[in-house]
Amino acid sequence: MKSPSEAAADCMEAGGTTTDVLHAIAWAVTAQAGWEDARYARVLDNVLDTAAFLFDCIAHEEAHRTGVTAYADDASFDDMLAEHRPDFLRLVIALSSDEPAATEQGEQGPARARLNEAFDEAMEHGTSVVSAMCVAVDDLDPAGQVPWVIVIDGDRGDDEHYFPSREDALKSLTIDVQESWNRVTDLGRPDLPAAPPDDATEAIEMFFRALGETYELRRADADLTPAEEVER
Image (cartoon, rainbow, N blue to C red):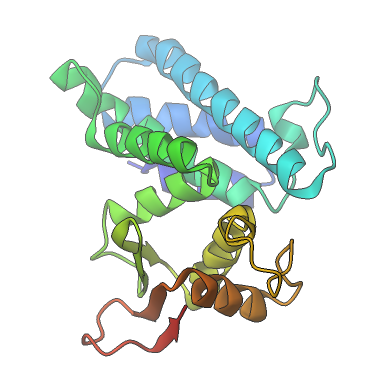
């Protein structure tokens, strides 16, 4: 029996569209829960509703980040840009795989509850909802295949996030810095630029130094000595 992740990977390898992959995820969730095929239609509806919500989040954030509308109002799942597809499907799988547990408990399963919490936190702080939910997916199993961790010591206390690679960690940190640059401009210092520098490393270092905060980037299984540290 294939897991939803395996079903999605097989479908993509076979050349399936994003819509095809969503159907494959629904079938895998149905089978994994031991439900009758008749239950598939309901599971598919939930998968497609989840996918539609995430699609809207990605489209909105892309337009906000670039100032360009990447998706038309009538865009479909199959119009999803290649760069957005991995995070989109990872979140769909996490939320959809939670359905059997939620059904059994008569409430939200653990994955959906954690991702809803991440969504609310991102909305409150004005940061990327999609990035926050992707981090939450990793946080659900920090002992799994997530070898890198970012620990931020800031004005909201310590914050710890896990990533499958160093590149993913830096990408997430860069996006967070870019989308939170208003915290720098709010300082009203004439020596700080109104927009983050184009160089990601320079932007990250300037952001943290200006705010008087620190971050650590290191392997999750390393000791407490950080691989990298920048004082802000």
